[in-house]
Image 1 (cartoon, rainbow, N blue to C red):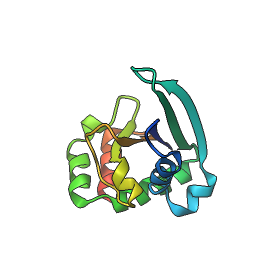
Image 2 (cartoon, rainbow, N blue to C red):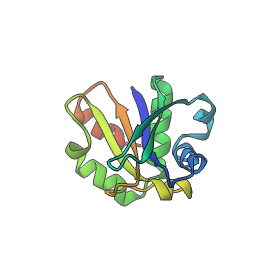
Image 3 (tube, rainbow, N blue to C red):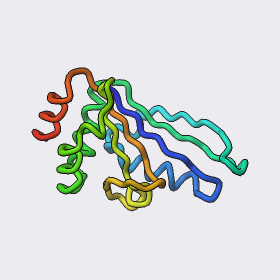
Length: 138
């Protein structure tokens, strides 16, 4: 099991605030152990964009991250993810969540279907049913 957090930092955004938003979604005990990568790229109109990724390849850290995030989600978001698991997990057993970047900066954890999000991807071994059972039992 592993986890990766990823988001875009647009030229109009404060780099430190976006990093803080991502860190707010990482369990406090793991924030100092994070692995950060930054890719510099350009948007449609040649505007600079950074793609920031924070990852944990250690299965124990990924499990802690999942438990911590799941515990902070609203019950309605949890129910949505369990009910629509097929939309949030692919054939390689990667479970995806899109979390609101502004809410994350404020310390909240909420699903979002918008563009200004932090994407969180958990990689699992096992079946969709096993993942569904895991999420239901948190």
